[in-house]
Amino acid sequence: MSWGRGGITAFAVALVLLATGCSQPEASRAESITLYTCVNDTTVQPVIAAFKAAHQGTDVQLFRAPTGQLDARVASDVRSGGLKADVIWACDPLTMQDFVTQGLVGGWTPQTEIPEAMRTPDYVGIAMLYMVAITRKGKPAPANWKDLADTGKVAVPDPKVAASALGALAYFGTDFYAHLKSNGAVQVSTPDDVTTGVAQGLYDAGMTIANSAYAAAKSGSPVTVSWPKPGAVAIYGPVAVSKNTENRQLAQDFATYLTSSDGQTMIGSSGSYPTLPSVAGPTKPANAATVQPDWQALASEKAALLKDYATIFGA
Image (cartoon, rainbow, N blue to C red; front, side, top):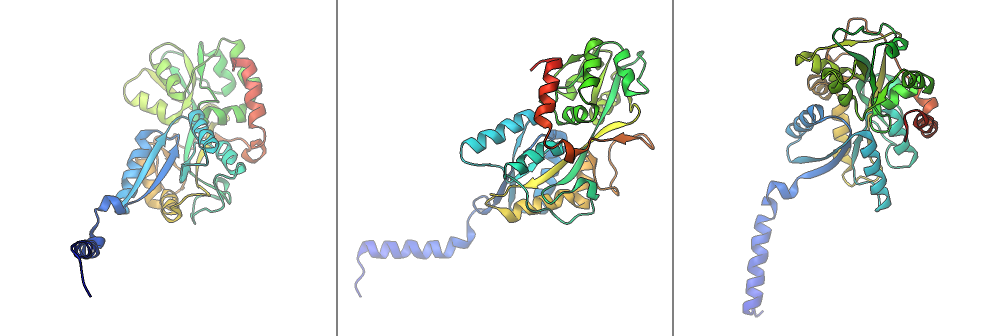
């Protein structure tokens, strides 16, 4: 058998590749998934870091935006060929149910001890948002939600932007907001905008999420946090796996971690309220009452609800 110079060179290269094929750089072999979420960086970044530390050689690419922008990103994906996220961590079940209805996510959930009220065959609630009242110090804190309109200039977040605001709208209904508007209430973008506005004295009171309000109070802002009767509006944020993910095992591993005791502990320690009852979370008054919408009944009514709301505060 005769070998030319080119044949010898090719054979040598083949031997080198064979010898080094199992020694490629870690980055080239790393498994990766993409997470879409509306959860703030304060929570999501430590959670991702903890997951990656426990799953060496993996990566989690992140797209994070308020719920309205998250919806727009998913819609853009669908128009351009399909969902690019492997996992979605939403901030309310109505948003997630939309993705299920479109056939984008669902069909699998991890085994977990998270209460059944926050589980469906397609997604599992992994973090809570509580819509509470925030008032400027010196202004009366509302004992009942109906008293909010009488606290001065009130700010509310936009339900087209923030999931917590959508949950509050779903619970209270549009008559509540019409009453606030008739008493001079204004709409801002996000719950954080409400918190900042009250802290700066732009507004006397408003509706915001508990972790935002307590963070402001802890930082020294002149605000008071209250849970008006019949209770703070509880909105659970669910996780679901894409039906078309190309790395299903890692996507499922990530969802499983989020519902586990370790994942829930990380969620709780990074500023969000976990859904696993045995895991501690941020500040919450003893025996604090909560209320929530009938998520199942409202799943098909979201568009109509937002349309009616728009007649009050505008599109």
